[in-house]
Image 1 (cartoon, helix red, strand yellow):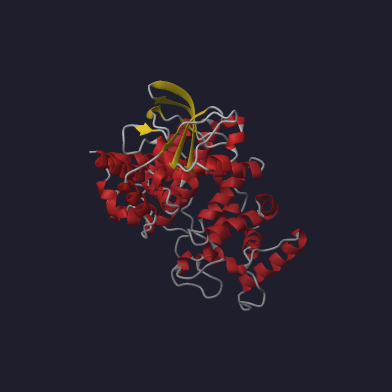
Image 2 (tube, rainbow, N blue to C red; image 1 turned 135 degrees about the horizontal axis):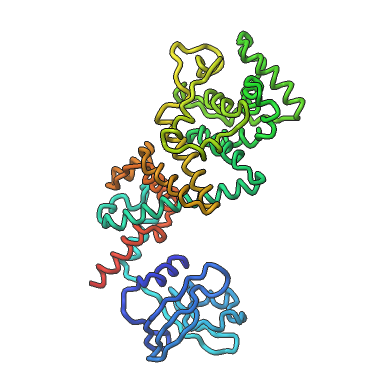
Length: 429
């Protein structure tokens, strides 16, 4: 509740022009101050006028006035420069360490505001404001979507920076793990990332001249090899023998087979072919990050993933029976997903961390040129009236859903803020 009070104070969403302290003095807020997310008072350097006298200092906000003493602010000199105590319920006076009484006001909002806030945060729909989205001005939505797109990219920069720190600054290793995760295509993302981390490039590099050994390492580490299975499949049994040798040599431990999900996945999307594709890039040494950086345009980037698998995986979706008509490792739609979730974020992160803004612009231009993702999140927002013309927008909508809607952070969302503040404006009029 206290966070909501912070929000109301920060955005001046109370429904009256003047406040009155608990001892009857009139308060006019000139400047709400700077919100503080660290230790100390909640808002720094505020300006308030109390009975015509200007005060400059800090603001502390509590649900109940008695929280002041419960939090030991009455004995903490850091709170002596609080000029106004703002509360939802005034149930006690508050004092500085020297015994001086601090002016205190109750922060009251209209019942309509509370109703709208409760309706948002307690909505049963996945998107709390779905029914009211059409009320929001298009400019507000457009500006928020643009901000969300870059917020998502910057979140990925942070994750990339963390990976780089843990991987001795190896961009190829970061690219390898990022590509592997993307090849999970949602349902198997975590399993693919665990596989890549369990099978690092330094290990694969020792045997990268042999495609069979690379495949044996990946399928073995994926927990997909059992010599008691597919006893008539020569290739499978060869992989089992190779992995047994390598596992003994390097003391390897595979991930559990149960990590992989196959339910409701079409055969061409089974993880086996994705692992075979990952082996394709590892064979001969992994150089994908370098190739991405050298690619001049989208066509060249797309060509990096237009891979036709050879040998066993040219005619198989799984171990066992071959298929009649082989297909490319990735469809054009799947390549779009790889460009959106691997290539663009890596280009943006590399440019951001190196201060190369031509590279960050290249990443954004790539997302703007790609079709939007097709998933339930995007479909929900499009149905509600938010157009989604490209992948940059679909990434923004995913950020909105996962970082704001799911956690009901409506007061931090520009759309939610507009709806709540409009309630105040309508009430004041």
